[in-house]
Length: 99
Image (cartoon, rainbow, N blue to C red; front, side, top):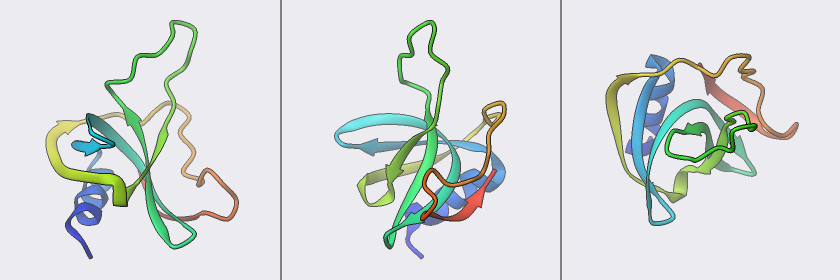
């Protein structure tokens, strides 16, 4: 198992934030779900740096693990989004681990 996958699994299990580089941006993520899609691993996570419109509810984004770099597990806890359902985004996705 690679380091990124292990760190994200620990973050999900312990409800800890992570920081990572994704598409050239530094992100702080609250990972909620690890899943597989067509043989690739993805994480559903709340991007804490995203600016939401006032009338828009925060929601999880889906990040391909292959695109995440420099993943660092934080000591900071997070609370899962209210009403979070650990079902994967698509019917054909395979859930692996959720909060």
